[in-house]
Amino acid sequence: MAKKLAIIASKGTLDGAYPPFLLASTAAALGFEAKIFFTFYGLQLLKKDLSLKVSPLGNPAMPMPVPVPSIVQIIPGLEAFATWMMQRKLKKKGVASVAELREICLESDVELIACQMTVDLFDFKNSEFIDGISHGGAATFLEFASEADITLYI
Amino acid sequence: MSDFDTEIDTSGLNCPLPVLKARKMLNEMNTAQRLRLICTDSGALKDIPAFCKMTGNPLLSSEEIDGKLYFIIEKGA
Image 1 (spheres, rainbow over the protein chains, first blue to last red):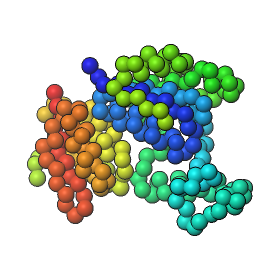
Image 2 (image 1 turned 30 degrees about the vertical axis):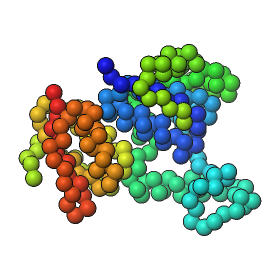
Image 3 (image 1 turned 180 degrees about the horizontal axis):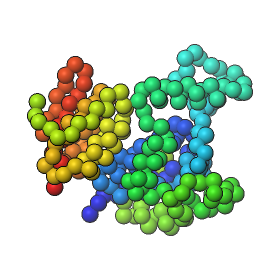
């Protein structure tokens, strides 16, 4: 029987988007049955319009070309700059885009589950999300996770 | 170097793309056909053997020539 991977994706930043899609697509390539449960800010990863950002603010570990003190990081445009820089770096280093990894997940039958409670909480409309996803709640995730070989909270 | 039927060059691509591209190609191949996979991602040195082991596609050879990794993978049954 196929091994199973269960992931909770709770982050909606550009850097936070990589681990769930990357691990699930690779797991599918290795023959796993994989499911990702998107909750809270993780729901952003299911939007048709993926405008994910990364911010150095509150993230002292983020490498910057020059040191930028926290007080300066509130300047408008710094987040956009950091995002642009990260995206350029990802491309230069031959890393797949989030959209590409998400597409591979869908093609390889990774189930993408939107947490219904947080969809309602944020008043998201189903039309904002990509096609091919499903909806579920805590019990949906736990049922699958109870049989999973690997369970990750990201 | 062993003979092969199909080749994918993933030079310049990073983890997990070499594995994902190998998977896609192997899906289209017949049993016992051989794939030559070329990688520049140094992580592939461990990832490709792990992929082969988990998916039952024997890794027939791996070698490094001028900073590039060359794997020959046989499509398993």
